[in-house]
Amino acid sequence: MDYKKMLAKVLGEKELMEIDVQGIKDDESLFHELVNRKAILLADWSGEDKEGMLYHFFNSRLQSMLGKHLSVSEEDVYQKFNQETEESKRDDFIPFALSYFDKLLKKLGARIVLLDLENDTYNIMVSYKKDAPKLKSIKSDFWKLSTLEQKQGRVVIYIICPECKDTAYYDMSIEEESNMKNVKCEKCGTLFWDESANEVVNMEKTYY
Image 1 (cartoon, rainbow, N blue to C red):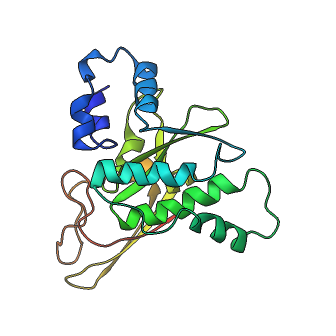
Image 2: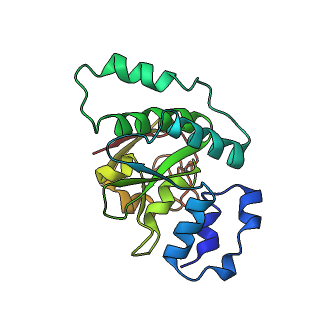
């Protein structure tokens, strides 16, 4: 697979220049390289190794990729968790925190992406917002990447055309969404997705 193409979606420009892509031998070598460079965070299903682990990881990735910082304090996620979960179990925090931070990252131009290695560890990465959905379509037995919503399987997309106000409704698998190239409004021809399947207009999505 094209490692450089994938890395450009999950690393900052400076980080990408520092990696010897040609010298990467295999998938596992790249995985360990990204873990060592703190571009992948390993989190146990039962919770953080230490308080603030997720916060500092996401803050660091934002800074490296976009030169931005989280707009909340380190304690905020714990306060929200305690407010919204009455009888929490040991494994409740990580899913809650991922959803919480993903919403914050989305506003800043990034998304959380999970690497599924079929174990009980969360292999957490951050991608640029526009690139995150496309990582699902990577053809690799190792790099099985998805956003939090894509773990659900299918998506309903609702669009109000900004030009003619006609409505469009799509119900498809996640894989099909990455193939929506040059799709236009049936009524007036306004472009919804460009030739690279990038979204051009506002869309309301529901994953299920």
